[in-house]
Image (cartoon, rainbow, N blue to C red; front, side):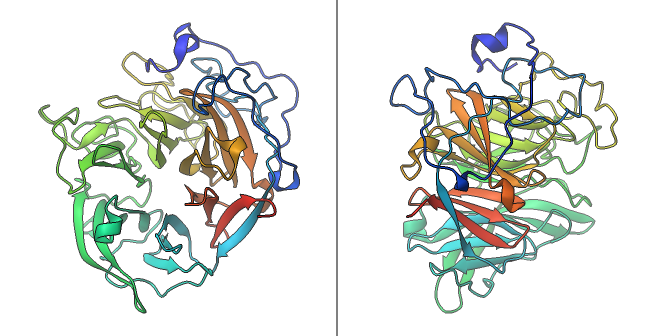
Length: 433
């Protein structure tokens, strides 16, 4: 198991007992501002001298009622209501299933629509026509045009990276591509280049994963879902399969020589970690530089994970939760030697999509938080982080009933989310700003 969770994790199995009713989640726009608990120093990511102690936000019965967390606080963390005052602005509307947002230097934004379109959102919210130059896209089920980010060299190269499901004979496969963004009256993409392709072709239309994150050392990560393969050859733990993996590449798509499986026979050299189900959320920790993912479980197994090279995160052999049918997944094991434990998990699930660490100045009380979008939950989750632990949870935007697909921190420190339900991009801003 991961040796990242301190003495409480290593001390054994803890049973989290929740007494009484949970604090009812509410939309924090109706509250006045307050501060988070004091920390032991000025580092919002360091240890906290006072930990949240409220009743957990989640008060529904778990789906996997017989399962127990591996350590205290691994699930149903105490409620940590910050009462931060904010307003919600609609910065764009009229979109079809907006999937990802990227911020351009002049204040405009790129947005992907899952049916296969990319647009530019002007500062006044006006939408461009769909960009020309996109490759053929298999927009079916959960597939389509997915993540988009600006290259680290965007100021010099105008290059972007994006993921999409590629149509193939017999099915489809996930692709990571890069291209040059051309602005103007008819914006377009040129020099489109596929730098990584999923090795398998699948007829499945689910579980693409597909978040793109750059590290600090000239590499790019892309998360890949297990495509619905629950067992047998090619599953998420099979190192010869790209299903259910975190992939690590150089920026040109070549393989880093220090990847963990470069010299292992039968393993794909691009694999960085394995055993993932459907990681649709990924972000780099502001202090440690480590990649964190948040991934869809089945019923009762959504996970927050810290990604380490060569580690196995268990799916489909070791997992929390149960199958959608109600059946046990595998043998029902939630912990095993050599398998990483999630930092946190939800049961019942929130269906997480999109994640961003907050380390900006616009909302001082939220520094040291991880924000996660909720699809099934139809809310925005804020997790209070203390070192590598989740110590508190708050749920925001609950009154909007919006399936939140992406979460990004904008250049001014405001928080942007994509509202898949209403086809909008929303911005959380300090009240009265």
